[in-house]
Amino acid sequence: MERRSLLAGAAATAGVAVLASRRVGAADAPLAFRISTENAAEHIQTRIVARFASLLAQRTEGRLMVSHSFGSHSFRDRDIVRAMAQGRLEMAVPGTWQLDRYDPSIGVLALPAFYGRDARAYNAVRDGPVGGEINRRLEAALRGAVLGRWIDLGFVNFYGVDRVIAKHVDIKGMRIRVAGGEANLHRLTAMGALPRIIPWSDLSAALADGQVDGICTTHETVASGQMWGQGVRSAFEDRQSFAQYVPLVAGGFWAALPPALRDVIAATWDEQVEGARAEAAIAQDAARRRLIDNGVAMVTPSPEVLAVERARLMAVQSAVVATMGIDPELVKQVTAILARG
Image 1 (cartoon, rainbow, N blue to C red):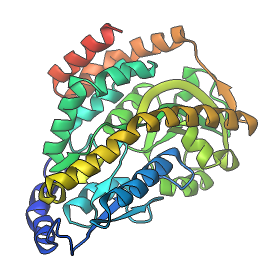
Image 2: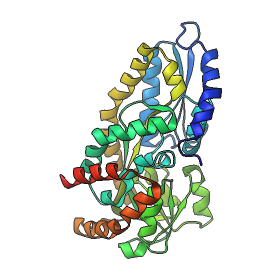
Image 3: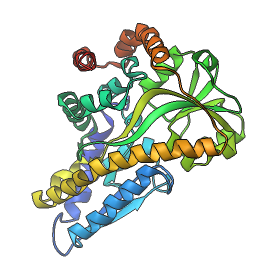
Image 4: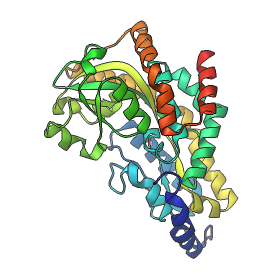
């Protein structure tokens, strides 16, 4: 099983050997700092990480050879953990949905308890003690380092392909593409959908072949891919979850860096976070307008309708927690935070 075990052997062999041969931190041996992201050039995440990479290159003054590959040109997000373990990649910024197969704790943010809630609910969890605990568990499972605070993509909704989704019942029986995440699969199944994991790089072909009836993603992702040209006809704004990206650095690489260089990398990332989150929110609003301008029908369920659906989905939450192996104590803490509003 890949969870918790993938990096253990690799980090002890390939990663350590590579780091030992590169004389980490030596002035005459600049280090490759390869960053991989999956989204296209126009996507908000790509732009944010590209800006970080450029600034980091300036700040490290030749100590790091910073490069940023996007659009799955180097690795798909589902492959980045292995790539970092093998010393082929130093940093990636995958979506949370790519990580619950290594440690289920991060899946707590995609449980039914969050369905239809606003961004404040997610912020209260991820930026507080629970978020810190999730990061610690991720680092242990991945044998890596979480560089700092996560950045946002935005609310995940349903998008109908060659159809309009007007109400929850319309979702039943639909083949829905998701990017990944065990918790997402459980939630969509409970809603009556037939979820299918399809990487972003394969989605255009899947749409052309008629493999899916809908997509589970965000306004920004649909707009950046101009997916109205591939059959997307409607958006059902049910705020299924709130998509976020986690900055990960290969553990062996990070541990071998001089503390001063680690500080520069971490500080450069951290100073981007608040602006990146605000920029993501603006991008989602702009993407929503762009979808409407290109003929995508926008259906927004009322808070009352979302609350009813959340209550219905809560009936399966305990089973999902048990199936995924999420720590019940973590769920209890999250429940208390959500109850405080």
